Amino acid sequence: MSTTTACGPAQDSGYRAVLGAPYVARLLGGTLIGRLPTGMAPIAILLLVRAEHGPLALAGALGALFGLASALGQPLLGRLVDRHGQTRVLVAATATASTAFLLLPCTGPARHPVLAALTVLVAGLATPPLEAGLRALWPVLLPDAGRQRSALSLDSSTQGLVFVAGPLLATGFAAGAGPTTALVATAALGLLGTGLVVTAQPSRAWTPAEFTERVHWTGPLRVPGLRVLFAALIGTGVALGAVNVLALSAAERHHAGWLAGVMPAALSIGSMLGGLAYGRHAWPGAPSRHLVAASIGFAAGWLPLLPDPAPAVAVLGAVLPGTFLAPLLTAAFLTVDRLAPEGESTEAFAWLIACIGVGQAAGTALASVAPGPLLVAAVPLAGAAFALWLLHRFNDRLSS
Image (tube, rainbow, N blue to C red; front, side):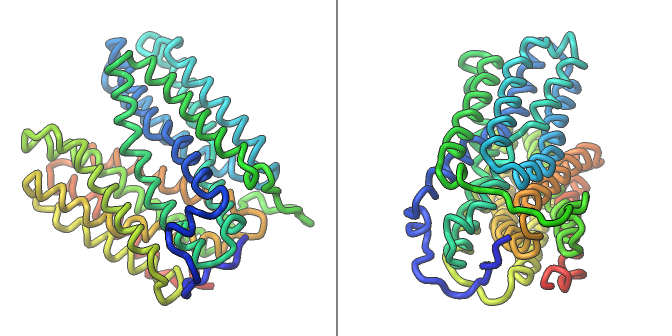
């Protein structure tokens, strides 16, 4: 666990200095490329099922299964990284996931849904913990606290691009050469990104901590502050998971099909801008205080979307909560880095990512069954408010 998480001034901690540090650009770029399957797979799976004239319900269920399995597999793989190092785990996981993507068209999902579900389950569970692994490498790559904070802000800001570029790539490959090609591209990009990461010297040299005593089976979850943080991030995930449904619902009501894609993209753009602004300055106070402040903005940002505004206003409205998302996530990762037990940082980061993913699945489900536009728009607000309440109510545990 790194303890250099102070938010005081640091020399030369700008983004140019961070990206100019050895291996930073390669590892950040490789992680983004390797995570593209997370954004591509749900769309590619949906398009494959529909191309075989399978029901939309089956397509949606398989896509949701992938997302949920991907989230749940992260802590287990993170624990394996903490025990055996990054190289073996990342290579084995990526090879398994890519093989599953390549085999999925052969299962005939519309005719053999159970076999397809098992294949999707394997692909999701084997999603390599690249994001958690990168967070564990930042203290090694950038020992300076200011640079670490800038790197985390840049990291958190750019990860949203996975969910903008991923669906666009999947639909582009499917439109040009069919859904099977989209899945082949998904597998190939996963292999390429992971290859860039595992062949970099810092990843190869990263060694797990030596444990003098047996670690409790609950891992990082035994730390009270981390339990509070992870539970709160489920609420944040609920808000994020509801966005796609909210956008699609608004697009249908206003007869503006473009809104279904542009509104989630606006949230991601807002997140990128907010994260870059947050990382450019050394803010006073502990990361736990930043968590509460960012959560207030994230929750309040959903209020303008409650009255079902016009499409153009809805796009601008989606930027507002996004502006606070990356700062919230950056402060969350800094808090995890501070509270995670020695030698369990990768698993702790993976738990955070998993909780957001579980929340996203729940948010999508809740928004899908909510009756009426007001209640659909209330789902992300409720999730963000729940996260804010937890972080404010138990902030002392995050500071300890």
